[in-house]
Amino acid sequence: TGATLHVGLEARLAQELAYVVSQAQHAAQQTPGRIVEELSIVAQRALDDSRRAIAALVEPLDQPIGVALERVTEEVSERTGVPIKLIVTDGAEVDPVRREALLRIVREAVLNAARHSNAHAITVRLSNEAGVQLEVSDDGIGFDASAARRDRFGLISMKERAQVLGAELSIDSEPGAGTTVQVVFP
Image 1 (tube, rainbow, N blue to C red):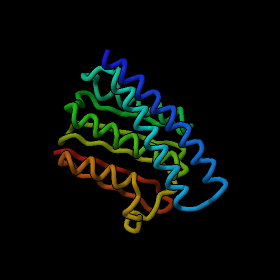
Image 2: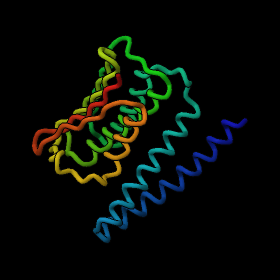
Image 3: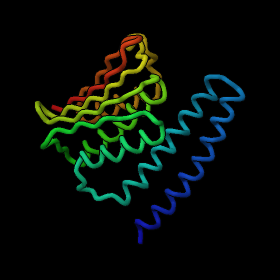
């Protein structure tokens, strides 16, 4: 069937990207430098996206957001070794377009926390109190959010995903105080 063909193609793409990631990571260790490091990061993101596309092809479109978030957080936790606590309030649901954007923002935020913050724990909260509110917080080293480089791929992609859907994304962080990423849909 068409879905089976897509899964096969996506699986091959994931295998190729896994090779690119391993080579880029090896090159980054052998030749430290910004370009090689960014190549490694971009390759890892492409691999993550291909794995997500494979999962999306086989998961039900009407899967509750809590189930989808659990899958994403467990996957990242298993890969990085950082425990992630998930809190989804009863009745928290979003439409399929927002659901996909939120899942991608969560994946990016928890991967950033796990890779860059030296976090020992990450918490993901989703509520539907005054509009949909998503919060990803960590107990890591934090950073000066006001001085953060504006060309960081992860920060840019999260902000763009939120803006396209009319949501507000904010990042609260200070050196030594962890980081909180918050997305609020009206």
